[in-house]
Length: 102
Image (cartoon, rainbow, N blue to C red; front, side, top):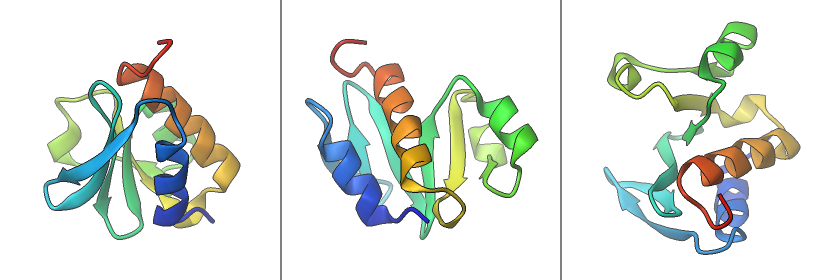
């Protein structure tokens, strides 16, 4: 099970990532937003695999009508993933958000 603390430490370990508030929630930025807490225990990240993730694990990955216009955004229930999977998601999101070397 991943936690918000895991998200924070993994994000801040990536080169150039900063943390600041977005919509009154903790958020992490490379060149653009790479991850944000949506609500307690739910994280927003960028991915090119949104449909596949939600199709294979809909209790873990989902989106709301708010996210319909942004096809790279997916919500993740942290209690349903491990830290290894979280790290993979954050690395992809970092790359998509313009992180160094992307």
